[in-house]
Every structure is written in structure tokens, then in C-alpha cells.
Image 1 (cartoon, chains in turn orange, blue):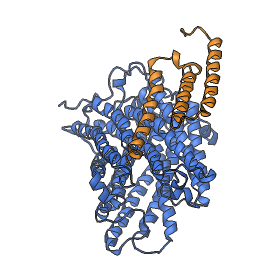
Image 2 (tube, chains in turn green, brown; image 1 turned 180 degrees about the vertical axis):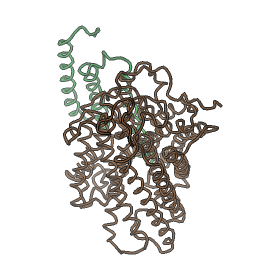
Image 3 (cartoon, each protein chain N blue to C red; image 1 turned 180 degrees about the horizontal axis):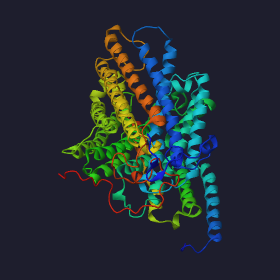
Image 4 (spheres, chains in turn yellow, blue; image 1 turned 30 degrees about the horizontal axis):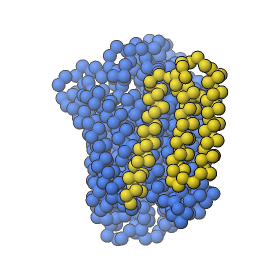
Length: 91
Length: 540
């Protein structure tokens, strides 16, 4: 995908991708993968969230300050998961 | 008071220019987009709950003068200490400085006409009020869980946990809106020439505070939603019988509620960083160290929540990890204290009320901070956990710290906000009573805690009675001081001497406009050429 050129077409392509990924999520849920089911579902959800943030929320075209504000909370998300796991995994 | 002119302008009917206070009436306040008015509304609201929470505290202390059931039932006691905690934390200590003084002084200190999003600012106030209304509804079946809402009890009690936590959810939303507004304001609206390293340190501390508000508050909001889903829909997030984990609640709760103690203390530290150089007539020592230590506290504050949970059955690995990490927060905090003291060294110190409260902050907060180190140490914590030692530590940091910082700020900025001076004759005895009363009330609680008196219980063994009586008498001294201080505020509002634009000869931008400031803050947006701490005092 190039710079800011595409407009409506980009949105339709991204929307198509989101619908596709939703279909994949539903399909995978019928395949028995054990713990991997959760992992795959989270992976697809993250990909969808990234698409929404990048294109629908225009993050792709923003400057580094906005990227910083967008990415910083992910660090704190990792922190709460890792910190809590340091308890539950070793209890 | 027979002046006929004020700052070169003729007085109308003998009154000084009223600045932003000119427009009167309910709607002129309720619909206002002026950050100063919104700040004042926040101050009135939060100070009201300071007094309400204080009355609860006095009742708790009266009950604790004697062991055994008397005056009111133990259940009433549980409700009283829950409401004392919840009101003081969520409706007073968290919002008072950021939403009150922060709203008023951030735009003034950075040379802006308002915050970045004035309508969101007004919305945050009314969401805050909506939260208060919901919290008042919960009093029909009042909460008795303590302000921490710990599961499994909070998931089972008949008290109205769902309503109260929804009220706090709204308060949290208001807090996020305020934090977001301040972040954008500080990034985008600084006056020409005001680089990051020319910002007043209060602005740095408010920036750090806002980061925590925006990042941490959603977590407690979600936690309360999960709790509500457990109570209303029976989903087993925290109930072990349904595969949940009650300790998970505490992880979520403290992931917000530990960083939020820095939402309480950082703005107070910012106020101290303003007052200490102004009343020592010396440039602040270690500007960058103080500024960056605010940011460090904001970030490190997220790494230490587990130290609230050492005795909950958390894994040993996590306990050791969190104990180690807890010490990291002490470093930036100590950096600030040393820099304030170095600022005062060989300064021309004067002891007006703002400085008295600022010095009290440093003195009491050091005690609060150092006892925090006892609690961060795993072994010591297991000994004193859930005793009055924690209560004393917490009050030394939050009252000795945040409230003293707030009172310092209120005395410092009262002339700017109201256009009138406070009386030093009333201010100093009030301060002395507050200082003595606070220490008598809470230092005894350190001793009680060390001797093993558990917190939260309505009853206690008779051996602890003497110190409990002392602590209660201390609370009366403290209350007397607070009442005199408020009397001074009321007197100052109506009869205080007229305030010049810069009564303290301080150098930050808010002192370059009128007292009180005009609605648009500055006639012309100032251009900044220097940092705000160029006091002429002796350089060391």
C-alpha cells in the first residue's frame, strides 16, 4: 500500500479484510486445537485491531508523537499480563 | 481599604476588577467553558467531600476511644470507614489537585487562554457530579467492604456494591477526560518560547499525573465492570467455585490503585517545587532531575502493585519481584526531596503560610515515604501488614503529603484565584494546630501498628486503649486547625485585603496577569524567554 493516495478503495479493501478475518475466526473455532484456539483467536483479533487503528483511525499517516501515544499503552498491557502471570504461574 | 484605583484602574463602587468572576448566577457557572471556573467548581465540590469524609473520620475515632460496642453498632462502623475511605480517595484526594488547581493553573502557567478541549473539560465536571449522585444512591444499602472492594466479600455482600462501583466508574471516566485534556493542552498550547525545559515543575508533575490517569483508570473501570458482571450475571471471574480467582481482583484493582497514589502525590510535589524556590528566593536546584523524576515515578509506579498483596497467597516469585521493584520508586522520590532541601540551602527563607505547609509536606512525606520502605520489604511487611502501621503510613503520605501540598497550593494561589489575601494571623495558628493534631493522631498509629493492633476492626483488646484515646484527641486538634483554616478562607473571600497581581514576587506566568485573572487569562499571549526559577538568591 502506498501513501495517502487510495481513499475509498483502501477503506473497502480493509473492510473486506476485516470480514475475511471474522470468517476465519469463526471457522477456526470449529477446529479443535486445545490452548492454541485462544492463541489463534487473539492473534486474529490483534490483526483486526491493527487494521482498524492503521487505516480507519489514520494511525498510518500520523507523526511519531501520535505513534508513541498509540503504542505506549501496549507496553502497559504486556506489563499487567506478565506481572499477573508472575503470580499465577508460580503459585 | 480606601483605595480609589487598583492597578491603575478606577474602582467601581470601591470594588476591584473581578476578572473571570465578573459574570454571576447559576448558569454562568454551570455552562461555563472557562477552565478557571471549572477548576473552582471542582475545588468547592472536592473540599465539600474533604469535610464530609473528615466528619466520618472523627466519628470513627470517637468510636475507637473505647473497645466494645457503644455509640453505634459495628456494622455502622464498617459503613463509616468504607465511606470515609471511598469519599476521601475518589471524591477528594484524587481530583482535588489535578481537576481543581490543575484546571485553574495549567493554562495560566503555560501562557494559554484555556485548556485544549474546554467542552470536554466541562463534561468531565458534570460526569464527576453524575458519579457523585450515583454514589449517593448507593447509600440506600450502604457499602461495608472497605474502599478496596475486595472479592469474595464484595461479590457476595447484600450492600450495594454495584451502584457504588458504577459511581466510581463515572468518576474514573471524568478523571480520564481531565488527564487527556491536560496532555493535549501541555503538548499543544504552550506559549511561544516555552520549551519543555522552561515549563514550571507543576506542569511537569501534572503531565506525569495525566499519563497515569489516562493509562491506569480504564483498568479499574473494567475491574468494576467484571465485578458487576459477577454480582448481577453470576459470571465467575473472581469466584473459585466457578473457576475464578479472588486474587485476580486484587491484581486488577492495584494495577490502578497503586499508580493512582502517584496521581494523588505527584501534583502535590509539583506545588512544593513551585513554592520552595519562591519562598527561598533561590533558583530551584536540579530542575531537570525534579522534572524527569516525576516522569520516572509515573512509569515505575506501574511496576509495583504487587506489594499490596504480599500476604494474600500470591506466589513467592511474584512477591520477591514486586518487593525489589518497589524500591525503584524510592529513588526518584528521594531525588525530589534532596533537591528541595538543596534549593533551600542558604536561601532567604520566609515563613508565610504556603511555605509552612510546603515544609510540613517535606517533613511528613519523608516519614511516610521511609515507612513505605519498611512495607516494601517482604519480611517486615508480613509483620505489620493489616495493622495500624499501614494506616499511619498511608495517612502520612496522603494527608501529610497530598493534603499538605493541596493546602500549600490553596494558600499560595488563593490571592490569584480570588483577588484577596488570606490572613497570616489566622493562617499560622491554623497550620500549627494542623501540624500538631496530625502527628498526635497518626504517629500514635505507627506505634499501635507495631504493637500489633489490626486495622479495620471495630473492636480491639483493652491494652491498646491509651494510645487510641491519644489518637482521638489528636483528631480533635487536627479538626480545630482545619476549621480555623476554612474560617480564614471564608473571611478572605469576603474581607481579605485586595491582592496585587504578584504578592509573592514569584516568576511563573500566572503571576503576570491580574488577580483574579481576566476570562481570557492574558491580554496578549506572553513570549517566554527564560525558565520560571531565575530568583536572584545566592547561587551555590
